[in-house]
Length: 210
Image (cartoon, rainbow, N blue to C red; front, side, top):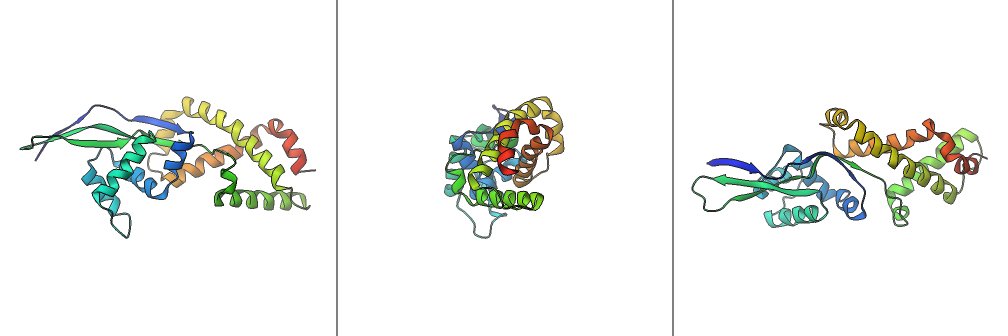
């Protein structure tokens, strides 16, 4: 019998995920499932384990899930939110939650990013679009990288401003969106910036569209 949950740390409505450590944890598939699980609100390790195992074919132990939680806590994506007091128990049970209800992952285009499959897919798609539009040979990878890096660096600043100004609306609109859907929203927003402010990308565009 539970006497009540005592929440001592409230989660933020939303946050931007920018650091390497945070992005690595956020993009880890097994940890992403745990973050999705915690969308329900503060939970005990046992509850998290139960809900987590409903989402995967091979169940994980509570010890494994606890280690996942600590990894996310170390990355500042999960917090110790409070405690649950139960009837007849001499100790309280810890409650964990996401640090923010809505998380916006930024694209960090470091040298290592260009070694990932995601970057290869991004370059291939961009190269195909440029060739289709110009009817010419596609630009070099280095020119495309320069263009994409500029787009994402400028749009990152704009995204911060946008999230700050329209946080409540975004929270409502994306409340039921999956992590992948939020990621796609961020990527689309970044690419839209080139249509709104093409002058910021003039030098890179000239190289890609000779």
